[in-house]
Image 1 (cartoon, rainbow, N blue to C red):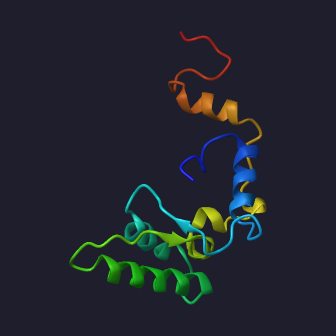
Image 2: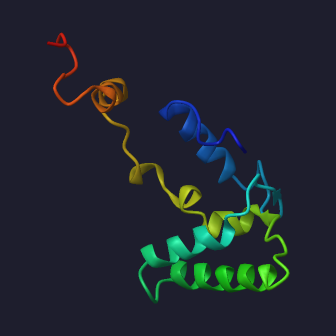
Length: 125
């Protein structure tokens, strides 16, 4: 899963569909991320969701569970299950129609990396 967010739009779409296909990966599949950011990420996503929504309640419940696991002994909150990730992980919640690739990702990246006084396709003064 470490490479989940690498690749082009086609690769990301394939990976997203794969991780959301219960026939390929059942919900009880254990997820072992290589970091312990569960509480921080859940707090951030909780602030971004509409209060009273089903997602807000799921995030709040999962955050409370993670905080209890961390407690004063700083116990790990991992592993989680793919079911939990599918219900609360914002990257797995995205639907294809929610994310539209730029018309030219290469042009966007080039523009982002160019000094402000130089635009793609022009010579530097």
